[in-house]
Image 1 (cartoon, rainbow, N blue to C red):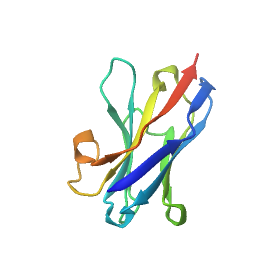
Image 2 (cartoon, rainbow, N blue to C red):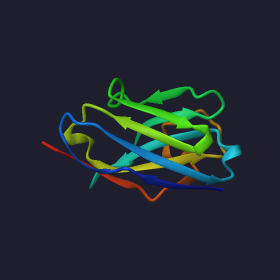
Image 3 (cartoon, rainbow, N blue to C red):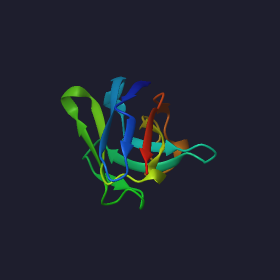
Length: 126
């Protein structure tokens, strides 16, 4: 099992930037993918970005491409999501998740992640 703790959320104006972090502990050596998802009120949890632990390949939702960047710091066991050019529709609770079991390649599906953080609120004002 991997324990995940997100931080860095907050309130930002449209067009601004924010970086959220996810600190991992526990069985991090068995991680296949780390992902970022988000959930707005009344909506389903949706994929934002993922990074494959083996080779740091990155994957993005269409809504995130060109604006968001997922990265990792091995020494700190931390994954980051740098968000630029933020829009009001990016407002949501952002969750990080770890796939330590499936390695299915379906990094865009929440059901293929076993461990989740508690989430951090990102609010973008217009």
